[in-house]
Amino acid sequence: MNPEMNPQQQAQARARIESMKQQFEQKRAITDALSQIKHKVGVYSGKGGVGKTTIAVNLAVSLAMDGANVGILDVDIDCPNVVRALKIAEQPVISEDRQMVPPERFGVKVMSMAFFQQDEEEAIIWRGPMVHNAINQFLQSTEWGELDYLVIDLPPGTSDAPLTIMQSLDLDGFVVVTTPQELAQIDAKRSINMIRKLNVNVLGMVENFCGEIFGKGSGEELAKEMGLEFLGRIQMKADYLDTSKPTVLNSNAVLEEFRHIASGVQSGLAEGVEAD
Ligand SMILES: Nc1ncnc2c1ncn2[C@@H]1O[C@H](COP(=O)(O)OP(=O)(O)O)[C@@H](O)[C@H]1O
Ligand SMILES: [Mg+2]
Image (cartoon, rainbow, N blue to C red; front, side, top):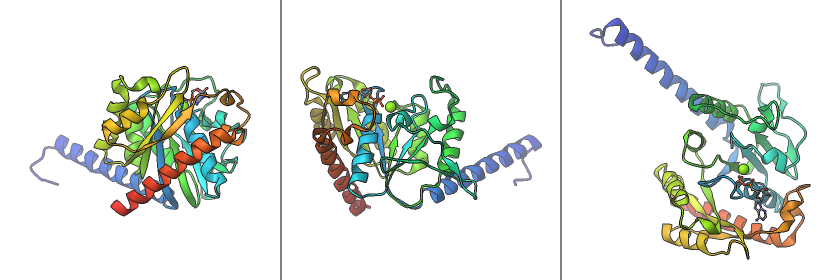
């Protein structure tokens, strides 16, 4: 350490080095925990309520139906709904080496922030640094085993939480969800620009809630405008009201839509590998 620094400066320098070391170790622990996963795909939107969880769950289940090993990671801190969508009653099991082993449902391994909530109604109001630590802890401690795909349900917006996750997870790509009403809104564009700044591949865009009520087409226009792949449209349907299981297991028409999106995701990932 520079001998010309006063004791206060020396203490500050030591604290900085310590914190850098911690960050480095944390990042390495996360990389280790995720090392047996071939593809990590985030599902993301600028706004809540556009169908992110629905799409993450049905995409994961349709990939598993095709024989892939799939996990789903729910890091939507404020609204961790994946556990509810998959009707999971059991908690993760703690392994001998103190890692959490995710429960499996409909052929998909599931880990969610919701497992650590006392009560489902309780809103999680965490401030920045806590969010950061909780997410990192969570990422380090899950034992996924070998996976072909990990689908990640991200928090919406451009705040701390999605940023931390995007930075910590080293994602291979994103699926951005929009709705037919979103063309005029700056949200979707802003979130895509944020992802692009982080140098993560945007695999493409999905337009949800298409049909008579909201119309269709603006997701595709937005994709074109932003120079992105259009992965497909999802119709607004009453089939989603049956919440006993993911809708791809109840409706062939919905399964078709998700198979189409899954194949676009797979080609996007293959291109991403070529581009590396
Ligand atoms: N294509 C669709 N047709 C009908 N209902 C849908 C569709 N997509 C999502 N939903 C419903 O809309 C609500 C919000 O969806 P959700 O996936 O929770 O959004 P987000 O995760 O973006 O907040 C849920 O009740 C879900 O069942
Ligand atoms: Mg959600």
